Length: 184
Image (tube, rainbow, N blue to C red):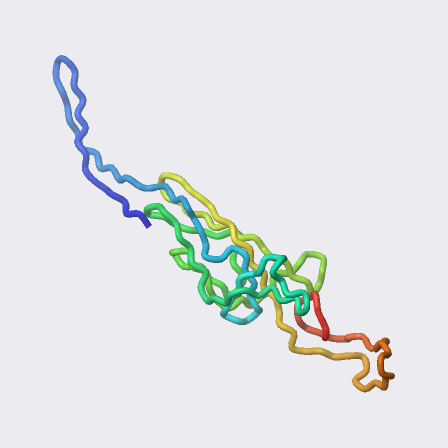
């Protein structure tokens, strides 16, 4: 953060018949700019403190659908500007916080649900705005909060199959994790 430089300045007005001076207190502020988060596309697991950078589609492992990149605990913001206040919209999910310096952390307690699709989640876009008396600037991040599967139940728990025969008619009846699922 750049430092504000308050000071007393003397302003003098003059003309051919005289002059007059007065003091003015002026504070020079640098407008907020160059807002940048360490991570901008993030996956959190419901109830867990750590987040993960989301891998770009070309790096996702097709065998297990894992989009999890590097693990982290705090998403830090860097910016240039003086006397900056920060805000975020929409509000962060329950369990998540943003400090006065813009660091986002916590253990999310609710999923980012996909409208009209029960059990599915989607990334939610958040806008962080840095404001001072001179100007404002924004940066956007995406966060998706998913639930790790903890229950998996099939229609039938015992089956007899022939070698090489496709297993049929044994659907999953309950899986409480976020969709899409991949069963091996």
